[in-house]
Length: 290
Image (cartoon, rainbow, N blue to C red):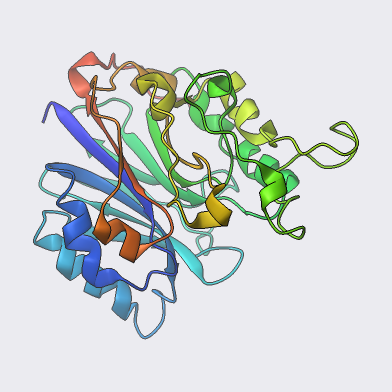
């Protein structure tokens, strides 16, 4: 395996499982799919999770991992193509000796990568920049020079290093209802009175640590939520983040924000995908233990 296909999608309460095959078909050769908002997929013996796995197995994504959310019933999932990778570990909050910055990580043997590939499906809180900053601090371990990691999902935040890109969409937060305006903007004391400015502190932390956005590498600033979301003020909040070791591996032209009728029916978010050329990755010595 020389290339690795990665995609992420917030499935909005995890209801339209039936549309997953049509959505995945938009990304030929997909190896890793990260889903968010698997609401209740852990109930009834994880019935809905295995229904989704059965549907996706026909597309080659025949193995899944569910991480129960520590905040409620909206769980994160990872689906993989077991024909091209082998799982080594899955860190869940119910297991002993799992650190706060490991929860949700799936470690995989993939394409001869060394150290093994770590993937994480994440969903950051929509209601608080402070809460998102706390989540970001838990991910800085994957910005190390010897980390081999892909972190993807619904971050509910704009990325800092693309702010000046001419095509970047900066939401007009005044168009949102008053109770929503503070969700993704800086709190009082960190902005001028009477202004609403995007809160990019969480992603600034990760960018300064060394994680890179596949969308920024590709120069594609397409919003990742459907046009109806937040009164048309939804921005680019779904991201695929790459550790420094993998940032050089993005296949030119492969990054895509998928817009389709099926996508509009399935969720208020859009699926985002990218391909990585593993021949461009230079292996690094295994990290020492904590």
